Image (tube, rainbow, N blue to C red; front, side, top):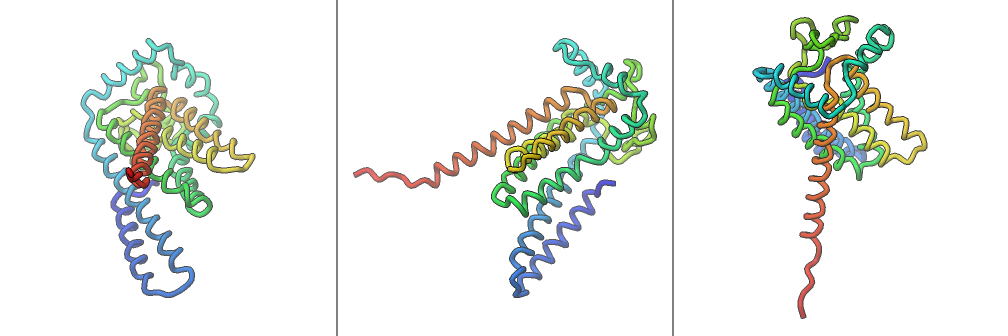
Length: 267
């Protein structure tokens, strides 16, 4: 189960207190410990903000079904592959659907956590850039999610099946009693986070096995769609938000570099 924003915030505050106390200890590992505690508190703080903003979106439900039908019709006009056809091809394969349900509910947060830990300890010079891009992407997604969007599984009349409920692996629960906001389908943060993991691993790692990490975004896209938790365009928009976040960060970095560059003095 995911941490609540209150718990994450308390953990962040505790880590800050520990880091401040550690400044009085003289040991060769103290600077590294303080840096780690501060960064972990920052990540927990960002996580708490994400959860809090996500909770706020729960109360925005008006128009969710209408928005989803508009999106469905838009996808048909764009001749995108049908989510319904994909689900029908897989829904009766119990082991596959159980795997996809578990992957949908349990892999997005751990994968990002592993990525950040790996970057912090193995590629510290690239860590802050990835963390900031992730934070900007989350902020962009949360802003869009203030416009409610129902997921495909809310439309059994179209033929969609709630795969989580069918196989007893729903993270939402029957009747909307679960821990996550069911009407924040657009954009898919599952897909957005998976794209961050895949892109960072491929561009930063030098291992010949790094390309296998791309299985994570592929499986994520498959899981969110086949389980009827997201539309195709939910993932597409998440990718666009990530591109904007990355571009914004790059633009700010270029501006800072130009401002810091020595100005030539006219003779």
